[in-house]
Image (cartoon, rainbow, N blue to C red):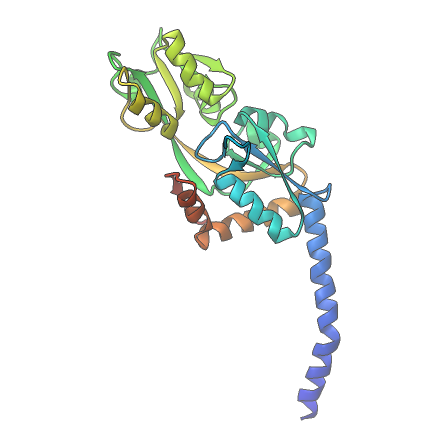
Length: 263
């Protein structure tokens, strides 16, 4: 009985200390992830699979839902910081304009951003005129072929490393790349598969090439130097995948994509 009583007394005295320690950890984490006291989430509006702006100006999408869930978990207010392209988000990493981002992982971006494991995997595809002699992915990289891309996008960075003969023609954003392809009579448009398929469905004068030229692993990230925040964000992403949050957010926003496997 004395042992039980001693354990009870010890628990009573240790509980406030443990709670204080947990509160201190939470404060340190919030300070690392949101040093201004507000979580500023960079939202890339150049990829409709991730986010969109409604007619009323409201932002929605799986990345917006994840940002809200994160702010609730760490107990700080949320501000969404919209950008019209992924390139603009990554270029702002060192400026202190945002605290967390939603971008495809890429070696170039990783120079200034620490990424989590992916939460989504989407595909990069090619669009060509219906009468084009190009019928397969491996026929794209040829002399005289011009490929429209969104400047600084994941597929722009990838193709910049891998294309040897074709020429990349860069538009300011990914949506603008499709318009550039159509208006300038380019041979190919590269982009995320979903907007290409939507464009092809509405324009019979173009067609998709079968297959994908790359997988685009969408992840969350923080600017380099925020080690505690990066570690927590990795755990957060795994939890959001495991409990079905990402899959439900995709469904709620009417988007079809593959939830990345656990890591």
